Each structure stands twice: as structure tokens, then as C-alpha cells.
Amino acid sequence: MSSGDKVVCTGKTSGGAAATVFGSDTGSATVPTVSTPSMTITAAVISGSSTVYTFTVTGAVPNTADAVFTIPSGALGNLPAAATGYQMEVATADSNGYKIDDSLFAGTFTIVAAPTITWTGSVNAGNVPASLRVQVSNPAILAVNDIIEITASQAIFTASVSAAAESSSAAVTAAQINDASTFETNAGGTVFTMTIKSASTAADSAIDIVLSTSTVMAALPATTGAVMLTIKMGTSGSLKTVVYQNSGWLTITNGAVTNVAVSVEGLITGVSPNSIQVTFRPATAMSSGDKVVCTGKTSGGAAATVFGSDTGSATVPTVSTPSMTITVAVISGSSSVYTFTVAGAVPNNADAVFTIPSGALGNLPSAGTNYEIEVSTTNSNDYVVDNAQSSGGTFTILAAPTITWTGSANDGNTPNSLRVQVNNPDLLAVNDLIELTASQAIFATSISATAESASSGAVTAALINDASTYETNAGGTVFKITVLTATTAAASAIDIVMSGVTGTPVLAAVPSAAGAVALTIKMGTTGSLQTVAYQSSGWLTITNAVVTNVAVSPESLVTGVTPNSIQVTFRPAT
Image (cartoon, rainbow, N blue to C red; front, side, top):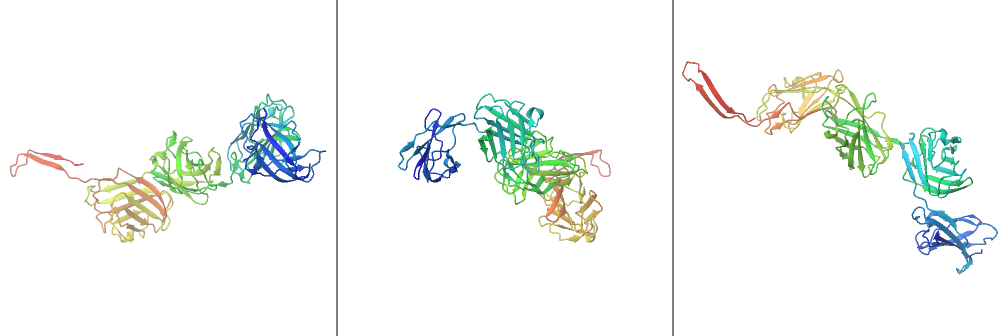
């Protein structure tokens, strides 16, 4: 061939019909690369409804040796249905397009079904997976001593496994390949090779290879990102690439969840918390279908039944930030694991905050128990993406508080006192806060910071020094103590008595809004208060009524003489 001559490649089915092997029929196309001889290619075009690929050479191409060129993916189209027999005919033409050398018998190939590549286990760097399963069809009958070679773009295999018989190890199983076949890996841990010792039953039959942990699969490398997999079959020195899978089956991550914190609204033994707010920061950005896994544990690391009944589907959490949508939640692991699925992106550069509602929570165990919630993330296949922190958000179960209301519960009446006895989960330090929030306005409004010692008995607080101060908000719903001397120990009893009649009263006349009053007790530092107890009923129910239909009927009304009896009639409103 000389400058200006052309090479014409025509795709055909095994029956001789035109076949759309090439890319979009738009004319100019990506030129091939040349292996031998050193001919230069100046232009390439696709025509014939994507069935013909033609390129022009510059310089001489001898007729005494094979010419080898490679058509790149940019000039190729999607392959048709599996098991289709295809062929490619090659002819030459002069610069005017007149044929010089007609095509001989064409090079043939058979389309195989898409492989199934299944990765079982964590995708986080450093973790050892459970298994890798490769299911792929072979385009031709595999003969004795043929090779199946799997090459990964990162070192996922155990390095330097010497030739071992499949039958001698459960590390590798391979359907339709005799147990006498051998497997090995290269020194770099990137290539797994199997040498066939018995021919497969037929062309296009399913090869099913399972590589398991320890012997063949290694801990994932620290290099993160998608792992590409090339599967070749054939004879030594003449392997043909059957599959090139560049994404979708394994993406290595390299991180752990950080910034885990929990705030439990209600830490009382034997009672389900009102809610648990959880904060975490993923190391790897999350996308739709990924999952957040919350695992309850004791301080010793054992599974803990933090969550509700293990019946599968559960109440989904509410989200504070970011604005991720949660599609489904489940409880598993004997009520120790709560998992929910996100829809949409969750960034890896900011805290995510969600609240698990009471409907997904179980009754807390005995007082004094230390619990924690670990948070990890997985992909849609449940493989770990970001490992959990070594310890999650911690909290301590407390004994139930004692809340004592003395005096009338009828609206407009002034009570005698409110006494709150509750344990503190942590040592209270100087300037820590104790905050009582009522669902109705039961406190005197806008009391500015007042020293307990100067309160003339309006407030007393055991285990808190008299120099501590108390105040209320403008709405009369919040009473707050600022601790000025640390408590003697964690989980010690805090005993606060607020008066409605002594000194400058802290309790106000009962408001007119009738019904049960809920009380939330929080402790901690400004901006980081933790709910210790949430008491929704049983201690105060405001009434708003009077007795009616009062009537009396004395038996004997004589002065100076005791009546025989007085019959009284009344109708209670409550």
C-alpha cells in the first residue's frame, strides 16, 4: 500500500448481514493506533449506518508482513445481544475508493452476556472482604491448559499465592471447571490466574468463580476510588479480553465517621426516651441508596437493645441538617441496630443531624448503665463505606426522677411548692446548668439571676452550693440554675425545691390552660444541654372547673342541738 490508500473494515453477522459494530455514523472518527508496521494514519470515517470503518494511510505498507492496528473505544458502538456471532472483514482500496485487495474470510468473535461481579464485605481501606464472585460466559470452549485471568487495577488479591489445586482449598470454587484446576496470584496482588485442567462443557457457558477471604483476598489497599477489572481467557501468550468492567462493582473508601454525639430526651430506666438526636460527620460523601447504621452498645462493647421491637420496618427519623430525605428505616440485631436509607446527596464536609423518634426506641435498662451509639455508613449493597468511631455518642441511664407538686392544681390557684429530685448523669462542674422546662407557664416570669442563699427559702437545692443562682424566662416556662460549685459525684441526687409562697415565690398561679403538664429536665453547659428526663404526665394535671349542683338536707335544724345528719349533694367537674 502507498500514501492515500485505505483500509476498509466491515462489520457483519455470522450470516453475512451488515452489523453495527462501530460508533455513531457521523463521518469523521477516532483513528486507530498502530502496532506494526510503522504506518501513519491520517483520517478515519464511519459509514454504512455504523457498519463500515475506513482509515487512510500515509507512507508505504509492505505486502510481506502482517499489519496490526487497534480500533479505540471512541470509534466503537454498543454490542448487541449476547451469543450473537459477529465477524469483521478487512479490504484495501486506493485513494479513489476503488478496491485493491478484496476481503478474505473475516475475523470472528461472539458477544457474551454481561458479567455479574459480586463483592461481599466492607469497601473501606484496610478491611478484608468476605468474597469476590465473578460470573461470566466464555466465548469459546475452554480447553485443557487454557487460562482465565482476572486483573484488578488495585491490589485486592493476596500476593504471590503459588499454584494451588482448586480442590485443595475452599478459598476458590469454580463452577464448570474441574477441581484439578489450579489458581495463583502475582507478586503485586493485582492478577488472579486459573489454569483449566478440564475443558468446559460448551462455548458461552457460565464460568462462576468465587474467591474468598484470607487465602486469596487481601485487605483493601489505601488507594481509594473505583477498581477496574479485566477478565481474559485463552491460551498462554494469546489471552483475549472478554470483559472490561471499569466501575459499579467496587469503590474503595478510606474513612471513618467522626463528630458523633447524642442527645437523649429522657434517660430514665424502664421508659422509652422521647427521642434521641444523633450528630455525625461522614468521611465519604453519601448518595441516594446509601445507608446510615446506628448500633447500640454497652460501654463494654456488647450489643445493647436501645431501639424498639425488632420487626423490620421502623419509624423514620426527622432531619435537622442537611436537607437529606430518608426513605425507609429498619430495626435489626435484636433491637440493637437502627438503619435508614437516604435519598439524595449528603456531603462529607459538614455534620449531619437527625432525630430518632420515640416510635423507634425501646425501654431503657437499669439505672447506672453506660450506653453508646456508634454510627457508620454503608453503600446500597450494605457494604461498609465509613467505619464507626472507636466509640460513639455516650449516655448513662438514670433512675426515674421524683417530681412532687404540693398545692392546688386548679387554674388561678397558687401552689405551695414543686420539688424535683433527679440524678445527674455526669459530674456537674462550675458554671454548668440545670434547666427545667414546663409545657405550660407554671413559673414566675422574668426572675433575674438570684443567689440561692439570698432567696429567703424560695429555692433550696441539695448538693448545689448556696452561691448557685437561679432565674426564669419571660414566658414563665423555664427555670434555670447555674451551678457555682461542682457536685460531689456523677449520678448523685439533685434535690431542688421551688416555692410558691415563701420569699419571692418562684412558682406562679396555675395558668388557665388545662391538662397534663410535661417537664423536661436538662443538664450540661450553655449550648450543649443534655435532656436527662422527660416527664409527660403523672405529676401535674391542671384543672379548670368548679363543683356544681351543691345541695344540703340537714336532719334537724334546732339551735343548740346537734343535727342527726346532713345530707350533701354535689357534682364534681373533674
